[in-house]
Amino acid sequence: MLKKTPNTAEQWIELIANTELPAITSTAKMLDKFSNDDKSSLPKLSKAILHDQALSSCLLKVANNTQHMGVNKVTTVSRATVILGIQTVKNVCLTAKLVDSLLASKSLDFLVYERLMQLMANSFFAAMLAKMMVPNYSDETQEEVYLAALLYGIGETAFWSSGGKIADQLACAAGIDSSGFKEYCEQEIGTSFNSLSRGLARTWNLSDLLLKALDQPESRTDEVKIVFFADKLSTSIAQPGENEEDFTKLLDNIAKIMKITVSQLKVRITHTREQAAQLLSSYGADVLIDLIKVLPKASDFNQNSGLASINQMSKEKKLLSAFMKLTKLMKSSRDINKFLQTILIDIINVFEFERCSFLMLSDDKTQVKSRFVFNSQAENDPTKIAINIRQSDNAIGRVLDSKMPALINDYSHRQWRDIITKELVEFIQEGSLAIIPVKIGDRAVGVVCAQYFSNRQARDIKSSEKSTISTDDFQQLCSLIDHLNLCLTMITLR
Image (cartoon, rainbow, N blue to C red; front, side):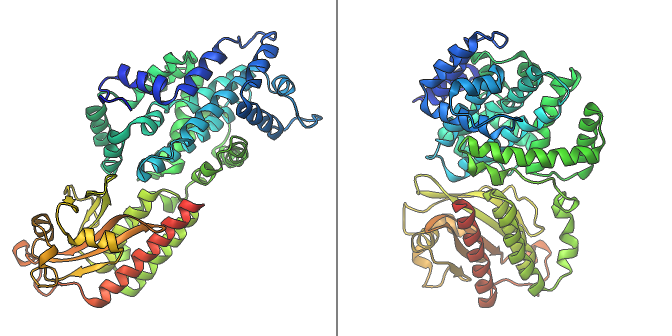
C-alpha cells in the first residue's frame, strides 16, 4: 500500500495496476502484442509463454482438461496453442495470472479474504456461464464474452486484495443494505467499483465488449447483456436474495436470449458448474470450487420469512434446529459472514435476548468492533459498538485472552468490578451480558455478546420477562457457539 491512501479512481488504478497486481499488468501488455487473427503470432506467443514456467504448466493442464475428439495428451506449449487457438490461450494466460495474483493475498484480514475468495469464484463462474450462453456464436465471440464476464467485477475484486485498512473497514460495514454499502464505498475510497473496473480495463487494453457491459448493459446488444446477466446470475446463485421472482425473471431473460426453455437452461447451468470445478483445478484454485454453489431452491430465498413459524416452536426444538442449521450450512457454504449472521439470529429466537452481536477483534488486537448486531426482533440493529480491550484490564479482553466465556448478571459484583470499564458499563446498560469467544482453530477472532437489559418496564415490556441470564441458558449458548467454532474451523481447513 502507498503511504497516502488513494482517494480518486486514477490513484486507485495506479496502485492496483502497477503496485499491487503488477504481474497482471505485465501479462496483459505482453498478450496485447499478439493479434487475435494472426496465425503467425502463435509461435511467438508460445515462445513468450515458455519463459514463464507456471504459465506453461497451467496452459498444458487446461489444454488436457479441454475435451477434443482424437487428440492425444498435450505435452508442449506450442501444441497447446494450436489446439486451443490464440484467443483461448490469451484468456488462459490472463485468467491464470489473475487467479495466481489474487490467491497470493494471504496476509489479508480473514473477513476480507473470505469476501475476496467469493468474488473470485463468482467471477470465474460468470465467465463460464457467459460462454455457455453463446454456444452458436463464433469462437472469437465466445472467448470475448468469457473474458468480459471474468473481469466485469475486477474493480471490486482488485480493491479487496489491495485496499489495506480501508478494505478492513468496508468489510465491517458489509452487513448494511446494498445501496448504503455502495454509498459507504464511494465515500471511503473516493470512487465506485464500476469506475475501477473501467479504468483497469482501459489500462490493460481489454476488449470494448467489457467497457460496454460496464456502461448501461441492459440497453445494448445481446452479447453485452449476456456479460451483465452472467455476472448477475453467478452472484445470485452464490447469495440468493429476498425475492425468488427476481431470480426467476433473470432466468427467463437468459433463456429468451438463448432461445431455450428455463428447464433446459438450468440443466446447462448445472453442467457449466461441473466444468468450472474441473477448470479451477487446472488453475490451481481448488479453494474456490466449494464457493460455486448449486442452483438455489425456493427455501434459499427470503430466509427470514420463516421466523414466525420458528417462534411457535418449543425452545428445545429451536435449539436443535439451530445446531442442525449450522451443520447443514457447513456442507454448502464457506461464507463466514453467513455463519455469523445465522447464529446471531438463532440465538435471538432461541433465548429471546434483546440484543445479540458479534464484536470482531481488530488487526492490532487493541479493540473489538461491531460486525453484526441484531435486536430482539432478529433485525439488523444500527448500533455501532467499539470497545478498547488493552488500555486497561477488561472483561472482553479477559475472554479473548483466556478463550473462556463469561456470564455477567451483575457487573457491580466484586467478581467483575475491577474489569468493567466505562465503555462496558455503557454497553451493558445495567443489564445482563454473556460473552463467548468465537474461534477459528485456536485463534480467537472476536466474541458473541448476548444481552438482556434491566430497563424493560420503561420500554413497555412485561416485568415478568427475563432480566438475568440463567446458568442453563448460558451453558446451552456456549455449546451452540462451540458448534459454530467447530464449523468455522472445518470450512477454513477445507
